[in-house]
View 1 (cartoon, rainbow, N blue to C red):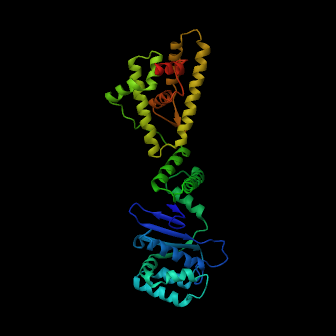
View 2 (view 1 turned 90 degrees about the vertical axis):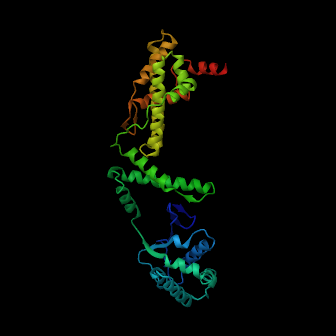
View 3 (view 1 turned 135 degrees about the horizontal axis):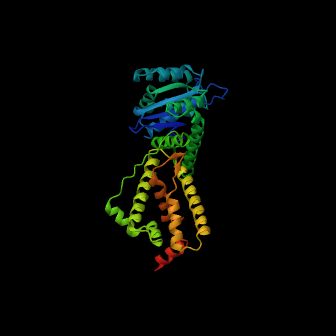
Length: 352
């Protein structure tokens, strides 16, 4: 969907079919589709320009004028009713005889619409043109559409408010960057599902992360920072193999849950904050209670405590490996660590 690109609102399907909608203000005191209304003829001219500039294919486009209920006009009604090229030519000829080209305000638009060289394109537009009443209860209709997506009634309004803001944010960003204010349907669908699931907590997250193969395990054992963090606290090989498996499975889950719309991206930010707080609390506890132990022992205690933590996303339980793997992701980015001096030791190691 796009705004103010091909028209007020345009919807382009994956097959290439286009629906152009021009909305006429409900607050206007005049009839925007009256026989001599500038709004009507300007819209027709703009559509004609787009067709002749090959911006749109008239044979694959629906041309829609949305007007407040009750507004119509004789000529636009003729256009709406014309379904064949013969009927469209008759409607166009009648329109030319009715409005003529005398009005200075209308003349630039009428000259284009009634130009003999453009008649074939104009006829194609009229055969696919319709006049539709706009709804005074758009918010109610949107809520009903969301309800049809099996979204719980208790979160309908929250989901709608978020999506309206998201669409505005996406279109504003596009306009700022000099691009058409368009929203991809698949991106919207993912965002809809993700925010709906974030607000509706009656779901269970299942893992999509498979156990990694031996080559992948070996590659991570050799080069990953989070494995180097385990080396600092003398973790045994079995423990490091489990860490690599947890890390990779959690990473696969994060990607899959986001792509499927199961988890909203902001939930991962909340998760990182939660895990960091847990690590900070465990580190403080170990530092105070076990100050006489070696730094390696302190690190092993911090790591052991964190491994027992169970993470929740959007109030939903996650598989056991997910929290452990997410801790390792933070350790890989050096946001947390197990050895009390992990930053310095790893920096020295990289420097050497």
